[in-house]
Structure formats: structure tokens, C-alpha cells
Length: 77
Image 1 (tube, helix red, strand yellow):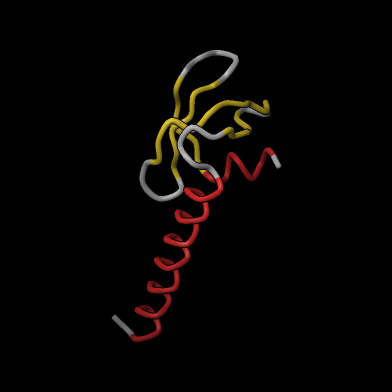
Image 2 (image 1 turned 180 degrees about the vertical axis):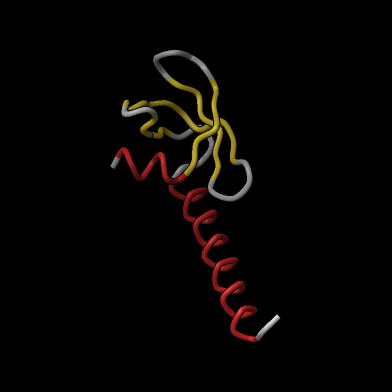
């Protein structure tokens, strides 16, 4: 593995860690969250943090629990 590839990989891992930390800080367990799936804006509450930028949420309207990603939250902003 070249040095440039190692450095690029380290940058990606650091960015993934930072994204996870920001997501956990901005959307704590029990806190409100809004996301978009299939073109529809959904609202709910964070039930737990998974790995990376994935969190588990409970939809207020349906009562169902599902996993969403930071991308889904960004799409609803």
C-alpha cells in the first residue's frame, strides 16, 4: 500500500468518526429528528445510535421503528 493511499484512508476514517460524533451530539437518544424517505418528510424520535452515521428512530405517525442515515436527515433540511 502506498503512503498516499494510507493517508487518504486515514482521512476517510477521521471524517467518518467526525460524522458519527456530530450525529450523536445533534440527535441524542430521546430527541426529535426529521428525515426524508421516498420523497416524504417524516418526524420521530431517536431510539438508539447504531454504527457510523446510522441511527434508529421511531416514526411519530406510524409508530414503526427503522434505521436512517445522516443522508436522510440532510435531505429533509
